[in-house]
Image 1 (tube, rainbow, N blue to C red):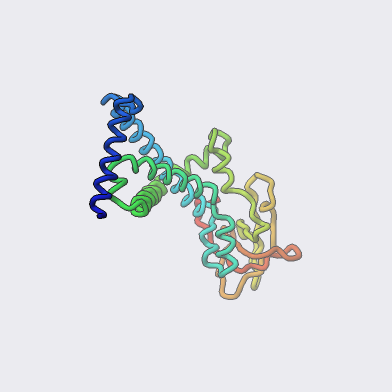
Image 2 (tube, rainbow, N blue to C red; image 1 turned 90 degrees about the vertical axis):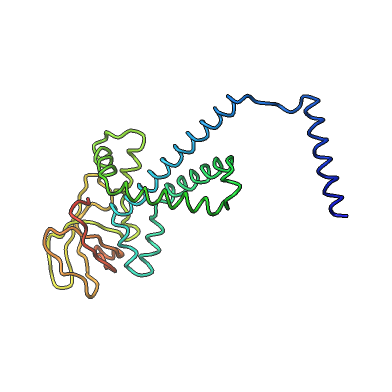
Length: 241
């Protein structure tokens, strides 16, 4: 009975298709049309993948350059602040590009033979790997330097946002200008005249240090009565602002 119904459905579909062909409602396309569509799809897919890779590499770079990775080692409050400061806009743009790329790939047989989840994970993994490799080059450092000089159009503001003040979240950076038992004096000036420019006394958490004069550090903790009650302090690499 089921076999009979299946045959009947297949026959109805075939009849419906033949009728549309006879009526001229089914459009046919030349080989050239399909070639142009194929080349166009591949071009857009490659561009989407390259742009996605660039965005992923920028996310890695911004987290490292700002020192925000240290927040993951500063307890629960640090982890929450890390996710608060995470470059979500860039991440959402990257996910949108990956979804576009996956949608484009569904037009090929590969998209029907492999699970969409597998395709997405594979694309994301490849993009992340290439993004990491890009960060081994001076690309983003060069672009950040141009942005600081006002010589980087379009995406310059995105790079400059790496320097945004996060004092309200308890994040400070600066150079040590004085040492005392259980505390240091920190100063920071990056010429953007925002809330993270200034000089503060930092009350060190137990077990931190030792530190030296002139050393640049990343500090996490609330500002209370002009003093930073640090929950974590980490040295910054010399090449970070």
